[in-house]
Length: 425
Image (cartoon, rainbow, N blue to C red; front, side, top):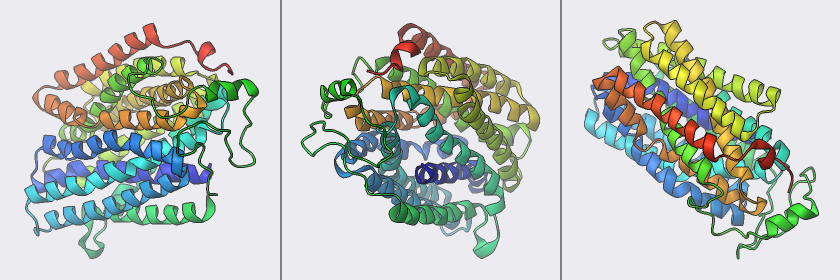
């Protein structure tokens, strides 16, 4: 679990560190806010396409190999992104070509980095009984949350003049951390036995000696559905998929807008290098709130998938409303923290709901769908949010609140009750 935690943590920290400096980099390059947001779109689209592919491959080839592939994609992407942005800031590339090259380098993370999260999720889901799966997946989700604390906290410290790296320092630093985790993963994580043969027929799981054993009833249940045909249209997944699409787009818009909102509300557009610190502080406050939800609230109150998802959506809507009227760093941080607290309940809730809705034999495919949904939220939502925010604060934040409420209404009607989802079968 420590190694799995580290895989998710280092990628999350690197990505949020990048997000905390990108508004300042974009301003320094003289690039419009919307174009900075759109630079992530190709990577997100690749994530949507590739995550299910890697998830199915992990069923056949093993989770460890896919985790390693994801880390390699992350490391190479961070190095190349830092290099091209450094070239742009140094005048070696024009702003246009620097942004195009950044989008191309970032696509490596969408194409290959997407192999790691579904492999980690499937690794955990296959080793936990149904009643404990929400807490187990919440713990893994919290590694992403902890990474989003560490990333913004360290990013300003990594903006150092050594070799003229400046604002691109976090890219290189987190690439080095990714290499360390990759080496540890290769050396310390045991090679997992693939759960299913290449023909896709479900067989008994063979894993570490401390993996929970399936009951006879559970084995019968899992044996009914061989992997190979799970799709987004599956009626068991529909309530969770719709909720994740609506709520995920809302979360992506909040994240896309926040960095630029900080620069605007604190009048830092003329001094973009000074923006990394305040933006990092706000993102860090949200990350701490996310950890509070996943480490404290969910296990303390033993929230099931439905309760966590619906409660989180209402809290996220309230936090977004406060963020929309905030004008000081303290109120901005508070609003973003409340919104993040809500999304911190919502994300593991819908992830666990998706996992519990299908059989153990379909966990790899289910995790691929979850990862694909997460990527789908970032194809255009951040850019759309920034575009609407650039025209009117009320348009941008109003759409986010509407998406949260729509997801809540849909989930209230269609999500199964927690007592049904979590009982052993």
